[in-house]
Length: 212
Length: 212
Image (tube, each protein chain N blue to C red):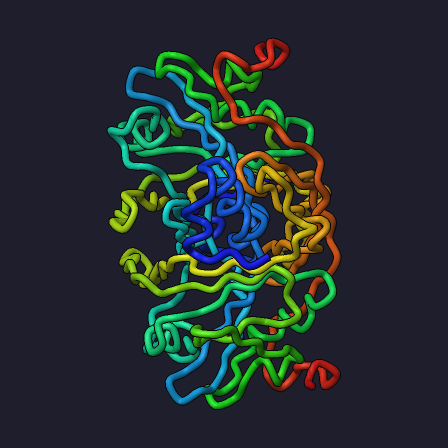
């Protein structure tokens, strides 16, 4: 099948959304926890969390701008300056998926979707107790993406909380042991099984058999 | 384990890179194909391709700025205005990984790592023949991310090429049938198995059993 730009435009909206949300490959499944100035917690699933840098540790995610309806996560982050990123595991993919429903701002998705808020000292935003890998983020900056009126929300990693058993001496994190999942498109969840690990690639060490 | 910002800073560089590159969750594995004005093809693995919008179809990826050494992909994109994004499948994860070695600009990673260039009419950049899902991109814009001197490279989807058998009527793409893989951190590859699919989430349809 060869879909050209015109073919994509001619598709029905739902099918176009499904295809274009899926073609970039597997996406991470994370719940972003936040809290409003009025102390209403919020939880929402995002598949757009992205690594930006390691020193300092920076992560970004894509959002519609605040001011749009139902951008509670971004509004809360701007109000309080902190948020959490929590891995979605196999055991709660359905609960996690339903955080994307458009609840009112006075409603907590923690309560509505069956999650438990967890707080640590000197950090405002709620973590997801049910998640095994939780990241505490300090809000840094919003970069506007003018071409389609979205924003890249950038934060600095202040806390990483995870079980000792899933990280080895090299700092590799075992996504299979964590039962962390990936998302394809808007609706489809995938489990992960490790199939390979290769060293940092140097031109002097490229295996001969690879060359044609 | 609880790693605070100070703990991350105190880690050795490699361990810090491994941890911070892994904690955002699974990342898509894509080969970006490009060609210089002098007609030297380039191929490089990226784990930072991200969905930005569906109408028009926009994808982004993160890069160090051109001008840095070994940013051939970005230099080529700026020179020719086009590039391809090609899924990495289980059958060639090792070859794909080694495209990250720092080859000289006159060398082709297609040749060095065992891939075949494929060209379509009226489109300059090379696709990866071995890849089952290939996207032809038109370069649109570079958004600077000043906080750590990286850039978000934005392009518009002009072509999607994939086997008929992996896409259904709804537009869902079967990542398991494609044997498309994900990356954790810098070095670790995961296969994908579908475990769930849920409808578009409406507050009126959140299953009762989810609520606490």
